[in-house]
Image 1 (tube, rainbow, N blue to C red):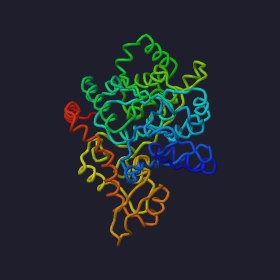
Image 2 (cartoon, helix red, strand yellow; image 1 turned 90 degrees about the horizontal axis):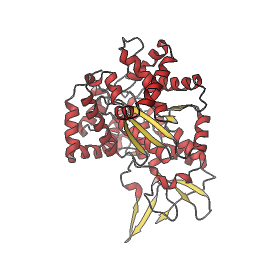
Image 3 (cartoon, one colour; image 1 turned 90 degrees about the vertical axis):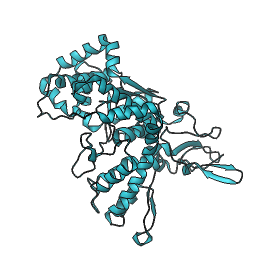
Image 4 (cartoon, rainbow, N blue to C red; image 1 turned 45 degrees about the horizontal axis):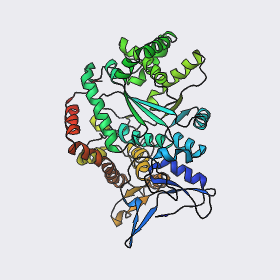
Length: 433
């Protein structure tokens, strides 16, 4: 095995930035020539019977950050090598997950003191999974676990019932929960440091811990403060809320402490209840507050859609959409020439394609500029704003990339009988708001 590297000191900032953006395509190695640490895109070449094969030629799998030393082969588990990451590397990797972090100094301090911090995210099983929940979540979880974090994924079945999803029918909600887990497994989430926890089971098992916590949070907050958190349920503070939906934010706030989470790694739409948890720490004089690491919310495919909607199939790509469905949805997506801001196609490229592949490949006729591979988002945006890259170039290339990512999921639901029946059942359900 031959492993290529470059001087870490001289290009540390560039390398760490690329490591944070494209973790599945990097290795950390020991430079034999200089005895210094190095980071480089995985270019592990194998010589076999006169063949020269590059690992980057095979489809990248979103397993975890893979580290290779001079004595190891590719594929060593992240748990064996997390200790090799320097604090700055851990911080950059974890911080890259969030669009916002409250607070960065607390995050750095946590990573310095705790080898395996606990992160948590929660999902209401409420319908078919869209690509942000599937692919973006896999990317983010793989970054966090590569940095040594344990990820607790809260399958919030009781919360979906409180929020009247699936008409409040718990059996349907739990069926959808099993479907969500099947997709994360199929898409390539590294499950080595991941725990799937069902809210109904965990709360019933430790009710003596959970409900006093919920009651204390409710007792210490006024009703208007709780109502302001209604965004977490996909509601507005102007909506007429049920009593169950008033109780919901108090329970979600309690989840953070119940799960002993160091980091709340949810979307920006969950920010208000995470801030409520930090305020609760002030009330009870708790020093160590949960750190909020809020990821970006991928917009819907149509103009003006701030986020994808399960009740509007045209607004999002579902994880088991067939190739033709993906092609049609992207073809109809909002993608104005020269306009970057609010362009969902470019957002998909930024948050899904580049983190997955480390590049964006455009295929077109020579008369239209010929084929081109973009190795950075900045390069792509510059061409797009100059109209050297047109929506008619972007859309087919984006469809091809997304279909490549989704194919293993399709194959799983096609070839696995249990998964196939699960998907059939979920598709038969009527989505309720």
